[in-house]
Length: 89
Image (cartoon, rainbow, N blue to C red):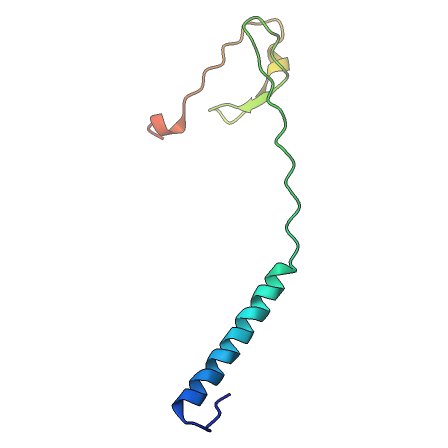
């Protein structure tokens, strides 16, 4: 709103007052917003030592099949993986 009492100074004061009011309302609204609930901590990762029994897991092989550790019970299993960044594909 522009008030034409004292010309330009009056309109600047009115504009600044309106701007301050809008900023105050925005700040007030932000103060009453609820913070999001804290996210739960990530699950603890199991730590294996040499000789420990491996937990059950399954992985997709380069052949597209899903391989489960249980499918290889009683056999020697060697798990090797390579980061995709170091492969050509």
